[in-house]
Length: 341
Image (tube, rainbow, N blue to C red; front, side, top):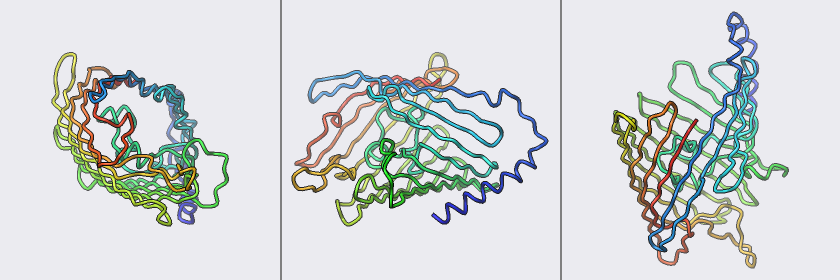
């Protein structure tokens, strides 16, 4: 808490110096007009084990963002169809006193992990990894600071949050929840990310530690990430989760601008969300059963000014004996069309 307060004070104090340095620069009025973006993801899934399929609008996101003067920015993003539900996602104001730092207050993506921090239009697979979807979900309400030192390939982020997700904003919190993330770029195309997070969705504190790396070299993108989750007071068994994948992209001409071949392996152990309890015993309930998954697929990049992709995947699941798979977490073929504007 003390470190975050000091960082906040330094960023605000730097605004006066930055203002003097930039006083000779005049920005065009158009620079302050809001930007409107959106992402639509529609898909069809088929489960051969039960011989059933379904159509879904996975996302219909719209965002409004921009600057209010030289040092203040904002963003508001809503998903009109998150599997049929409406969700408010980002809603924050941001102070940018200098090029090396920002302060963000509101509802946002928590600085944590690599894969869980990706927006839908830059995901590689139609269905997110277990780290991104079940174990390390990353949106909350709070205050975050980011620091980008000049001349050093490093980004450091940290923040204080409610620790209860997006819907429980009225409760008063006695214990602070926090998240911190550091990204280093030792050489061009190589990223190393370390992050940690503490949340308290109900009566138990959850601690998560994550390490990940990816390499982009020529037509290849190769990535691996490991997450460890610990429950205070040994309320539930610790959880290990892992995600690794590789993408090879081939540039093309005409209707398609590229063809990407993808392969992924990810796994997770039995997981508790920190909230669900057995009504009779008041003991934690398994909210996500442990499993392994192998995914293969092809992504067809459709030529357009921003982004449009046709994603074709097949997912093969492996469960331990005695597990009770969720109906949506079984072997399936997925066809998804993603359009970004």
